[in-house]
Image 1 (tube, rainbow, N blue to C red):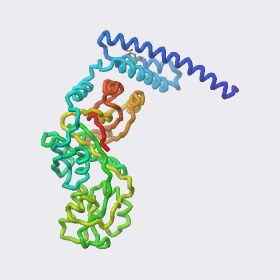
Image 2 (cartoon, rainbow, N blue to C red):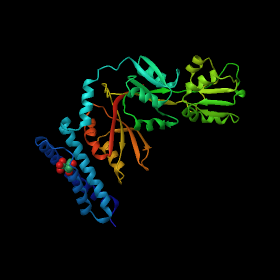
Image 3 (cartoon, helix red, strand yellow):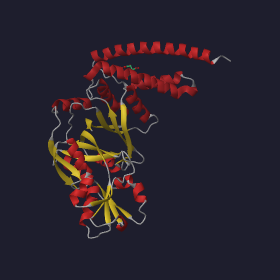
Image 4 (tube, helix red, strand yellow):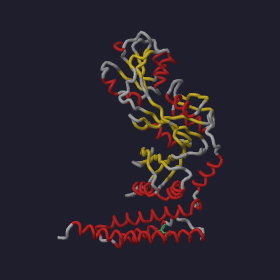
Length: 383
Ligand SMILES: O=C(O)C(=O)C[C@]1(C(=O)O)C=C[C@@H](O)C=C1
């Protein structure tokens, strides 16, 4: 049997030849790009690619068919990315044209003040988020998340601020379900440090408390603290500020709310216990939504909602696209699509400056990999 070092030498020689051919292929692909520019042709040619993948499977030994197909797809992925980079914005992709038009029409500066819709009542964490995003927001409150989407959709408020996810409890699933039902764009995101406190009316002792109100996410984030209070019933309500308001307005002296410090002041409550969340590095991310597409300078994140064909490798190919363009995925969430059996919507947040050639290449080609691709916007996150 040959020594491992000898076998590796042979592999190195083969790889050397492969990379020589790979460079040669890239040069020919550049010539194809030039030809396509001259003749007004699109970079992506699906029928040619299908034929190439079939030929790769045919040429490979039977047990290597799938690997050969994947290799061919990756080669063409790299080749297409290169062609897109060379041809720049020559693509006729409509989404890209819409994004570029929005970039040109959006003012340089993010508005310091605006009419903003938030869910809940005064004191909600969404209010804190809105005040981080805008210097002087004029906030109106809607009882539901759906109401915030509608207010923005109908042009009754220019922006809406909605929670997306929490570092301890995960995604706000309802938000991703509502996204499928509404038309909107994302123009900014921010993070708010969340610290929950058990608030009650002055005079209530911790041992008196029988019922606790809060938002589902806050309840999840304080699971350990709540498990230490066995005789207490926990009730879900719209948000943590609503919970505090309900306690303040209650006739009873044995109720409490998991809520924020500002809500204690706002509703005349006192903290029976402070910072009761399971983890101290507890953050919630909020999105600022608008009706029209606005892309401000410095946008380096993009959100997409994608439905993929039900075929082996569909998600893999999409991930390979991000990989080939060196685009980092910040978030990937999947939600079932209502009324479709086990079909899923994939929500992506990716990191890629909107002015980069990689972004143009992504937007010009992503449509070919998806059944549906909805572009939600490109934006910066304010810390
Ligand atoms: O044949 C072409 O039209 C090419 O641009 C080359 C190539 C490839 O790399 O093989 C790249 C992109 C197309 O989608 C199809 C094939």
